[in-house]
Length: 175
Image (cartoon, rainbow, N blue to C red; front, side, top):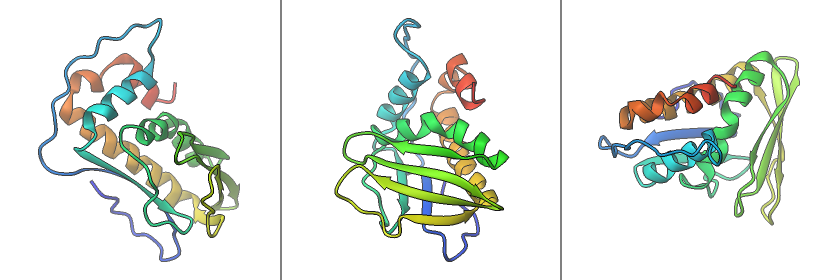
């Protein structure tokens, strides 16, 4: 599923999660050890299993396609999405940190009236250009929520059992 939002021409930030085709793998049940695992372990398992079957794209700050992967960067992004969405809807500041080696970028969202001032920080030689953007708060919330809904729609198709796992239910509720 691709973001169907009317994107203002000046927007230079996008998050997209979509299936590559109509055929997705079926995920089997997951054996979890509550002493060692949590929702992040499940997200890593899911993203590893979906690698090659879905796409994760991020663009912005002068780069049309960030070098992100489904298996490594998508679980990092997803672990932050519910909290980011909640804070974006309230108009609070928040961060999305792509901390994995190779990408190492952080986005900070600061409310400025009805807009967010978004700053991009790089932990590599890559330099964002521009290094800040202003994006409407409502659009920001819708973009983040759409990414989450697309992922959850795919997850529900590939494994209703995993979709309803208590850790993932708590995660998507921001708990």
